[in-house]
Image 1 (cartoon, rainbow, N blue to C red):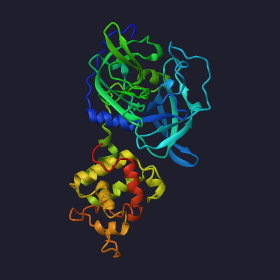
Image 2: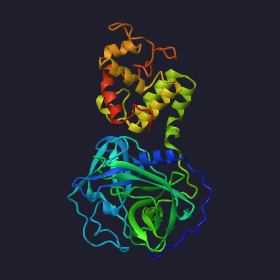
Image 3: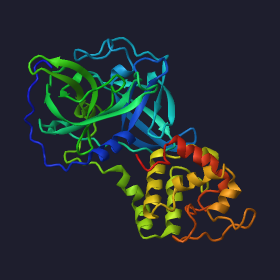
Length: 393
């Protein structure tokens, strides 16, 4: 980077998260951007959400931050601190894919571009609640700052589909406030095609930049640099405050799951089952499950809920345990009910109430009070699509 200078700003004492915790934040707050015309695939970070009613449905309107060049040919985007006057094309659509593999279609004409940096924002609506990334302060970065990058790389010789890439930790090399396109931050973490628009995360889990450039060797220091736009340019553009003392909460342990965690830890299985149902139906106005709700359940939520049930029951209860039994009976829901102790005999009555104790049969909980056996095939398909039957994230 021409004119690269060392960062001498003093970094406040911030507690670092583990690499796994930062990666979980990256996965849950990042979207894959798919151009329908096949050009310029990219990545984006969910930076805002608000409750919203769309066509009579209650849900959330999400703001995604990415690069301008993900939507426009790079020659139209800022390379010299200004945008060309060519109009935004409006005939091409795009899709975004969220952490639970749900896809949402929109029009490229909804994109807004930054006046003097390679940044763009767009919005999408969903009835599902997703996490947003916390906005940090890039001006507090120093040469000792540890950062991570995340994004959806284009297919390679070893992968048929775009693959999530998470690299780090690595050090910030320096900044240049006069860099073209707003690419003020330089680091050594590799950015592959398709990762443009992805987050640059501080080790505290907060967003400090948007990735999108580089891959060239600086002749002064003989290091290949990769470039990011500081999050402060987005914040000032949209009048969003940066968080000076920013530390993200690891998502698997956030407040949403604390009640379930506590109930399972106390072996209060009945209340834990009720809390599980509440978590799974959040964002809907329903009190029971149907096919549409099951097919839209949050993948990240299902993974966490399953892991907690398996962990605190010592492997006796949980979705992955029930999935193993379901496969063993070859999708026969009456045989499944008998095997897990929901029904007394193949055609006998349901056990009412269920056995809310560790003495219950393996796979007994969560019980049919949560989800009927006749719906379990549809539910299992959702679990498998989410890769939620494994205890490995």
